[in-house]
Length: 101
Image (cartoon, rainbow, N blue to C red; front, side, top):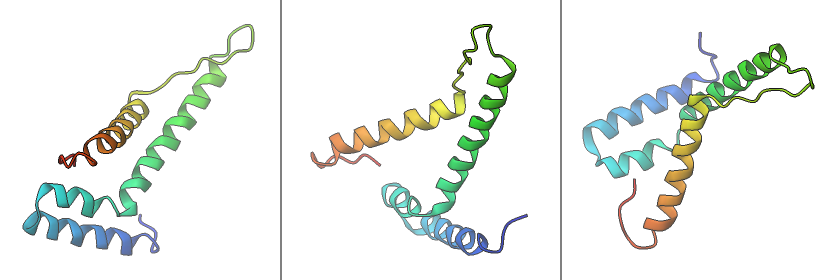
């Protein structure tokens, strides 16, 4: 169930998505929808859930020396790689007037 405080943001995102789908170019759409907090809330929730799962797994898998095994999940690695590459490509292509979104 959604919190009443979150509903206006999701409604705004739904309206923005409909307008973008019907009337905007892909490059404008990505910029337009990137200002919505719902996308970032979803990624943060996924990241915290993965971190909690890793922490519980590490407690169970402690070695004899007391070191925890650190595992990086596919989801976290994918989001980090995508965000970093998007930032680096944008920093490289934006000043040279190439489209990058």
